[in-house]
Structures are given as C-alpha cells and as structure tokens.
Image 1 (cartoon, rainbow, N blue to C red):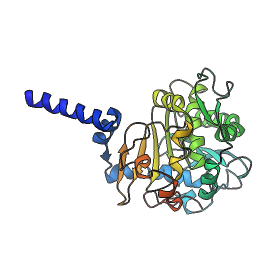
Image 2 (image 1 turned 90 degrees about the horizontal axis):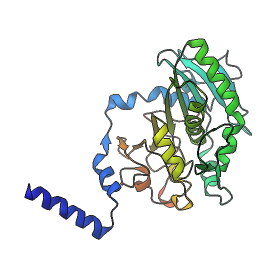
Image 3 (image 1 turned 60 degrees about the horizontal axis):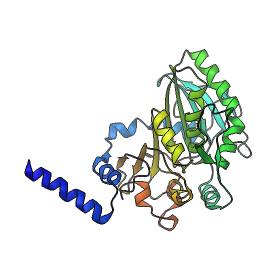
Amino acid sequence: MATLATGIALLSALSAVYAIPTRTLQARQAITTLATSQISMFKPFTFFASAAYCQPSTTINWSCGANCNANSGFQPVASGGDGSDVQFWYVGFDPSLSTVIVAHQGTDPDKIAADLEDANFFLTNLDSTLFPGVSSSVKVHNGFHDSHAKSAPQILSAVQSAMATHSANRVTMVGHSLGAALALLDSVFLPLHLPSTTIFKTVGYGMPRVGNQAFANYVDQHVTSLNHINNKEDVVPILPGMFLGFHHPSGELHIMDNNAWVSCPGQDNDSNDCSTGDVDNIFEGDVSDHDGPYDGVEMGC
C-alpha cells in the first residue's frame, strides 16, 4: 500500500510541475480502439449522411446514386431545402434500424473552412421559440443558428409524421460538415418538442465546433447518444478555434492515419490520438481528409 501511495503522490507532483490538467491525464488513459464490428455499425449512418448531398427530386423517386441507395429498405417521408440558401435535408424511416432518420446536407470543405476562419461570425443565444427553456448562457455559432432555423419547423413536422406513420420511438440525426453541425443542433432542438419516451441518437462526420462551453456542457448533460467522427488530419473539427470560445461536446471518434478508430473521451481531448491534439492548428490540417473515407465511404454523390 505504501508503494501505491508513493506512486500516486509522484504522479500528482509531476502533474503540478508540468501543469498537465487531471482531465487530460484521465482522458489519455481511457482512449480505446474500436473493434471492426463496432466500426461497421456506423456505416448505415455514413451512407445516410452522404445521401443528404444527393437530394432526389421527390421522396417517391428515391434514387440518387450508390451512397444514397445503399440503405435499400429506407422509406422516405419528406425532404426540403434548395442546396443553396437552405441546406438539403430529408426525413424517413429505416425498418432495419427501427429508427426515423433526419439527415442534413454538408458543404464544400474549402468553403466551410474559409467560413469558419472568417472573423465576422459570433456566438449567439438559441432562439427561445425553437429551444424553450434553454439557458441564455448557451450560445452557438450565428451562421449555424440561422441555417438551422430555416428548416427546423418543417423537419419537426416531418419527424412527427414519420413517428406516427411507422409507430416509431427512435430518432437518429446524421450529417457531415455543416450538416453535422445542424444535426447536433437538432439533437438539442427535437427532444424539446417530442415525447419524453423518444430515444435519440446523433452521428456527425467532420463536425466543426458549434457552440460555447455552456453549449458543450448542455449537450453532454442532455444528449444521450452522440458520436462525432473525425478523419485523420481534417482541419474542420478544430474550427472555430477554442480561443474564440468554442468547444466540442464529448463523443469524439477519431480515425487515425493507420485507419484505426479510437474513442476520445471528454471535450476536445488533447491527446495526439484525437483530433484536437493531432491537429494543433490549420497549417497542420489537411482539408482533403474532410470528405473521408469513413470506413471506405466518401461523402458526396
């Protein structure tokens, strides 16, 4: 017992000397590698996120390319957006997964990287009508806020219709890039308006930071199932910078250079195995990693 106590004291002393936060030490110890079977469970959601780039003309004629048609049993309910002023989105039901799917279109990696480096954005409060009861301390990127508000009422109506039609109590939100940011906002928005018995899941790919520390804490406390998957040296997940007040919630999965997937606990885990630690700044990032591949799937049509 004395040896153990001595070791703990030494670790504490080293932490103080090198000013290493306790959270970081614990997070690095807890990083785990996903098994192949665990990785494969995400592939249907990857295809759904990719399909949001390939908006079909109608929900009846759901045919828009290999990635779009990969989940063959999917039953579309509604879709919207114009791909310009309003991002494409769609809602439907997947019987094999027993869940309603809500998917948001992303955007060109060069464009979103440039937008997130633009100094004109700012943190703003959530709309009290869309997000009733959420503290005014919770703030998000104004561009993401405005983009989400343009389609939120229509998406809520479509989800309610899909749940009623298919007697569903599960809702899964997916998206890539800007679409991942919108999916994360949906993961806060939809539970405020749907039955408390609803089971939610959110899977984002190449997700930028969406809000401030209070937002990240709110997500950690209220969003029960979230994974944001970052590919190698993708620069988008480290934007906007933490020095501007932005923070990721927990739930990161990082695809490493050897294609292993690791789970990075905590918010903005700064281990070299995780995105925040691996990509210290935009000059060390690679925008070509933004579209994937995510377990062999490239985003887009």
